[in-house]
Length: 239
Image 1 (tube, one colour):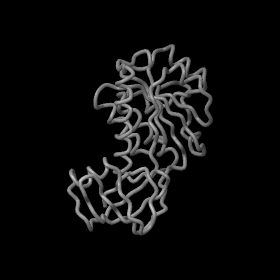
Image 2 (tube, helix red, strand yellow):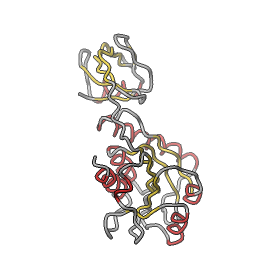
Image 3 (cartoon, rainbow, N blue to C red):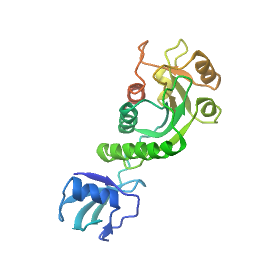
Image 4 (tube, helix red, strand yellow):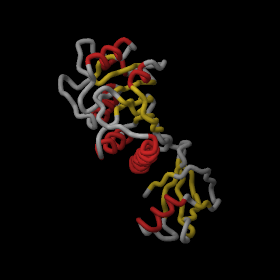
C-alpha cells in the first residue's frame, strides 16, 4: 500500500484534505481514485490506514480508518554529517542513508568540497534534499522524517558539543572496536568529500574525539560511504 507524508494532524473517521503537493502526486501522477486505500503519516510517529474520499482540482480528501502506532525508529540515533557532493550523487547519499535509518543530516563544507552554493540556491537545494529524504521515508516505512541541516564549515561542526560515540570515515590504527557500538544510544558519523579529508581535518576530528571507522582499508566513494558505514553499524549492533 502506498505511503504519503503530510505534516498535519490526522484523526480516525475525520475527513482531511491533504496538502497540494501530495494531492497532486496522488491524483495527477499516480492517478489514484476515490475508494483507493493509502497510508498517511505526519512525522510524529505511527501512521494511518486511510481511504481516498474525494478528489478535486487542488486537493485529495482522505478519511483515516485505522491508526498503526508502529514507530520503526532505530533504538540508536545515528546523526550523519556529510559534505556536499556533486549532482545526483548527493540525492543518492541522502536517500540510501535515510533508508538505512539515519536520524538527521548535517551538510558540510570541507577543504576538498567542490560544491559551493550561494544564498538563493542554498534554499532551493535544501528544499529539494529534504524532499528526497521524505520520499525515502515514504518508500522504506520510517514514520519520522530526518532533518537536513544547511551546510556549515567542518571546523564549526567539530567544535560542537555532542554525546555518544563519534566516528570518522577513515581507516586507522586506532579504529573503534565494533563491540563499542553495541550499547550506545547515539552515534555521530562523519563521512568525507570526493577528494577525502585532508590530514589537518583528520587530526582536528581526532582531537575532538572522533575515532576512525572504516571497512578495512578500502576507500569508499563519497556517496557510498554513508550507506555502507550505516549498514556496518547496524550489523555490529545485531540489526
